[in-house]
Image (cartoon, rainbow, N blue to C red; front, side, top):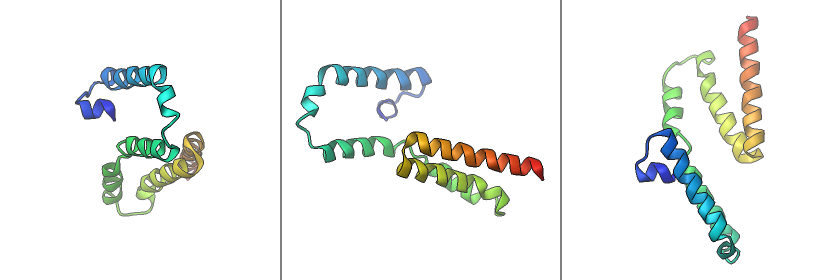
Length: 110
């Protein structure tokens, strides 16, 4: 989110700048965050993560094909998104990977 707002489009710049900013904040401003309410810190995290959800891709995936077999990408996207929200990042990604693997095996078997 920081690199995107700064206008950086290269992978090096978009990964390096946030890394440096986070390292500096962790090193020098950790004590200041002790007095900030946890709900305020949670809001900062939610606003920072909101930019990482690609809602345009969901709309494109939904509009393209009309049959159920071809709309499985939308279902997989929604399962991975909500699985990550409800179960955490690691569990949500594992859930999406397992469902994707099941879909792949099912297609190969037919």
